[in-house]
Length: 322
Image 1 (tube, one colour):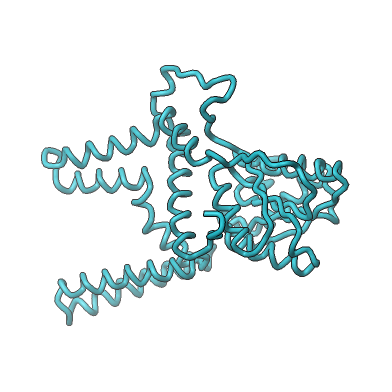
Image 2 (spheres, rainbow, N blue to C red):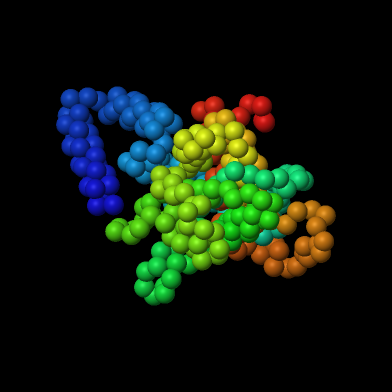
């Protein structure tokens, strides 16, 4: 983390110094063009090198306005610069974005649409591997936490253990591949995949059946490394169960199929309730009162939409399943 901050600070200093020097020899209008070219170059780098830490941090900053909160803040900032009397349309747009994205009824509709079809009626069959996409499913055992805690997506771990027991009942003993990268927000802590493996052992999964993938930072890298692991063990053609969230289940299945794996998605941690479910979701006054929880759901759905576009542009989604 210190190295990353140092790199960012160094780039900021270099940028400021170069800007001041160039301003003395190049008209400001031309510097605007150079700034646009620099921004374009950064987007290109983010497109081809998304996992570079410095490029990734810069892209998160640049993509902030594409999300509900970021778009609202940008619009309100423009409104303050222009004056409130002249910026009623900008303020109205910002409020509309916040209202739509944080209304429980609307966020549930978005989640329904994204998660629709995630659960497919498929017969339970023996599999050679279960892949747990576990990034962000746990919180480290740091004070005041007495042990590793599950996040709101942590039921992937519970479901993976359940699926393992189901496979054992079918006469199979699959590998359980835990794909989760380092905890970037913390220093000096163990990899998240190790913590997930410990929890799986406590839930009855034999340690010798667990394979740690400490470099699983996104779906693509998890798929490529899973393929490499299975081929190395002579299991390249085996059936693979991928455990992930309902929101990104379709992209996960397409991404794993794209690298040549025979994959079946088993999603969990759903955030919406599908139409026609029994009992039905009851509409209440609270269903139309904005909430932070609904804003989080909408943001997750929108981020998945942007990620799907990116994966499509990179050609990382299996054409046969689109």
